[in-house]
Image 1: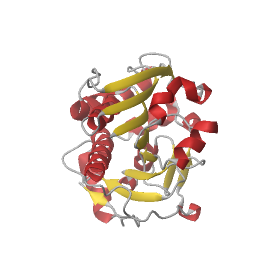
Image 2: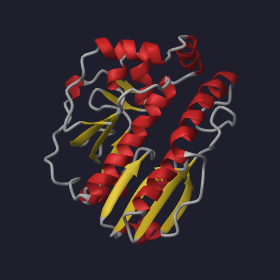
Image 3: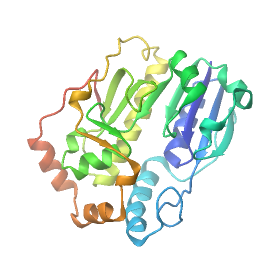
Image 4: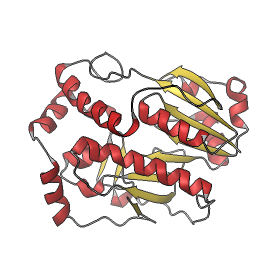
Length: 264
């Protein structure tokens, strides 16, 4: 079996690549690269003291579950490109990666044009970090916590479509809160998403259930990158949300209606 994944270069993305490599003869990885030190280096996110503090928590949580940046497995063939270049690629540039059995998208930029057509025709699966259709767009699990709704933290595994995070849902993956801070809680949702996806590939269950369409009228927030500002990050940090507060909010929350949910 061959698998192609369109992803990024942070430790959580490399973890998915290596998980998929354990299942396949060859894994093709197209990585859209950004700095591994957000907040410290001017890149996709601004360089600022507030973002440095915020992302130091993100990096710490990511290291807890995924370790540091590392090399990929021997059976991985990778192509590293700059974030934003994905839709400029031509088919001949990634030709071997277009002959796989399974296609996965996780943390890439919004895919358009011929590549969207190809991936939708080949039933590509997208890992959306957020419970869609309730939270769509970028940084969805952050916004769920910002809105005081930790019951909406999780991941949606759905078929890729031409719209952003709008394809038919296969299942939802949801973390159970342990003794974790908010950053660890949202990061563990990535673990649950990756574990369940690879398990369903191994068990041949991924494509067996009937997906359901997403209903836009259930949407709570559609977030954009531009909305995650220094001021928003500072406000979130100032609240000093901790595990006790998370448990309190979850104890009184009504779980949203989910499809084939996996709680872990």
